[in-house]
Picture 1 (tube, rainbow, N blue to C red):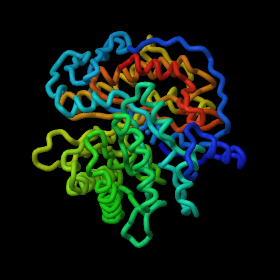
Picture 2: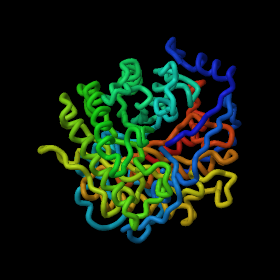
Picture 3: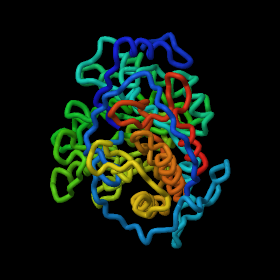
Length: 467
């Protein structure tokens, strides 16, 4: 998800950067869970401006950000409440699952789908290594705390694992940390720090997702024909270095090609209009970039030849991953379904992502209301029918619902239903946490990193009960 700006007072920034839990020397369905109102005691206010155009991946056609868009799906008749009857897996995560709809389950129990189920549920270390700027900072290591206000500690990751999260996604922007000579050589200090935090999770026996995040610009990666060769060169340069660094890590480490590749700055940024040639070409460019990513990683040695890889469609949206022009990249001989599909979906948009002050925004959600659940069911059914039942794994590695004036019960019910609906169809989800809790921005935060504790433990409990 894209974070445009977070403004901290100087004193607050100094305090947060130095006083986080486990401080470091370095620089800076679904189960129903009854909740009680929790007072927000975060130490700063955020200003995060995000275009309404970032609708849920399926709605908009969302890093988290997306516009509302009607999505055509092949989903059939809606099912009984997913929340009421979730098909749970045991701890091995390798058991067979039965989808709620009748019909063919061929492919559901592929090794790829078993792997995705073993990821269980994930959490995003958002607004951290993905922070970026147009002009490079004097101290490149300051980016880590620039948006979230604090550096990441092992104690934080330990708490995330203790809460039940089995996967951690670490979004990374690279362009402020590469040479300007066209070789895009990554700073050793930045790559070392990314690896250090990856190891926090790996040491906890967690799965970790790393990616190219906010590098979507005409200077680096941009899915348009006139920028394709340059974009390929950038993708090859970044992934050849990152893949080599992590070559000896086992399959707990997952590499994600790109975050929400799209035509930034155009009227089609969040609206994929396939009647327009530039949109069709954008999808085709993304296909080529995904293929270059796979080829680069596979040629990087070590365990990269068999590693599970994640690839997105246009804007990581549902439509982007299911339109007639999108193609999964070809893998090397011997690999079966090692390419997983990445989707972001903040749906239903009016509840999950639309700003509270906008006219269509709603702050209530109920598992007993088909108007609340229909879009989630449609999203999951579409992905199940297109990919899961055909043996191809799907990870929704960004989802969530922003706080709207303390509507914690609605958010808890939503999160529990969403996770249950996904898990019943063999899909794993990762909550987007940007460490934002106050102000008028996108307050998706659930874990208060400054004090190493969950602001909304009931919401986390609801998700864990849905597994």
